[in-house]
Image 1 (spheres, one colour):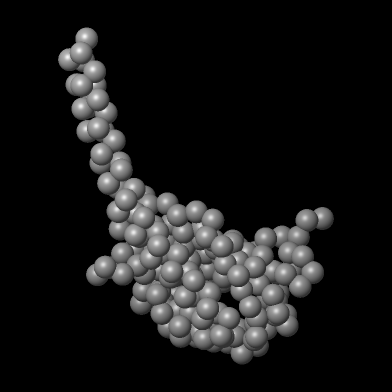
Image 2 (cartoon, rainbow, N blue to C red):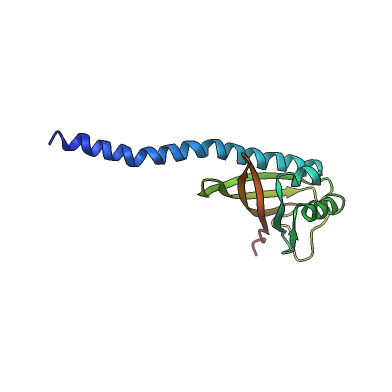
Length: 163
């Protein structure tokens, strides 16, 4: 009986060790992803479209809250520059990371909740979730490229007000 316990313990360690190592390696990745989201939020709050889009890849896609598709970082930046100078000029966003999933070692899906205030208008078909507050859910697909996390796709959906 005493031989079975150490063998069982050894097997358990062999199965748990890779999982523990994988989790430990993603701890740093999660910190980097959260920092990327924080930097992007700060850029929004400054109305800086160039900084807001700096972590998108050149060939990224972005679907905005109205369902429009922007293809490539240049178009994403151009469209955000336009809203930062009009309906979202002076707006402020608070972003909360809801969940991060790693389907592959160098791929992350980052779910966030955005709470936007201080806007002067909204795109057609979009309405505030609560008076003065637009809440959206953003899903990013990110890839680690040359040691840096980059956004390859983003999809933003407005949270509808409750009836």
